[in-house]
Image (cartoon, rainbow, N blue to C red):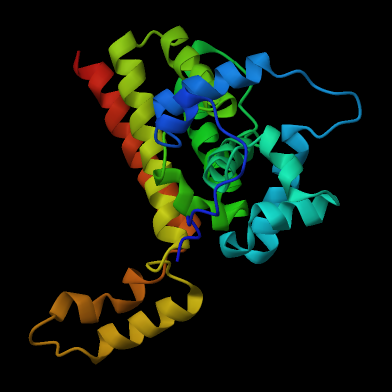
Length: 253
């Protein structure tokens, strides 16, 4: 179970545009930005940031199954119905929470335009670090568009880095999306059922060595090598290969 289960609808009516658009879609985010623009903070009142902080602690400590509007209210010492002014549903809470998590990414300082590769690699590793720090939220990355303010901040930074380094607009967009998707895909594998923990690697090595050498000569011969690289090493090797290929497209022109 991913924990992406709807709660009982709250008694407050959502704005029609926000209510009708699929949660996490571009149309939904557009409506959310409009709602945020209209809302006024109340002195000493609840803030969206405080709700997100409490939600993230629950998800990190107990998993998504424990993250409900009622649980967030209890964590904050409030009635859960008071949260609906800021997040109209649990589905909206989860989408906002993913963006809140992305706000933890420390974007590399702008340096020399010639350092686009080093800065892109640093940004990819930082993105992965944040995702691995909040493993319960990783499955949510594919449940909606990453279009919140924190996600757009990172997108703007990545595109500016590449365009200032001399990449064309088309190439900058492709590079940014390719590297981003590589990070997300790698983290999904590292945190899901395919995650190769030390115990799983040892079991796989045992399985490979037990196979008949007649039918699987290379798998049996390289059993230790196939399971000897840790997740960090695999990620860095793949990232270097990816950036090598990207750099090669510039040289070929």
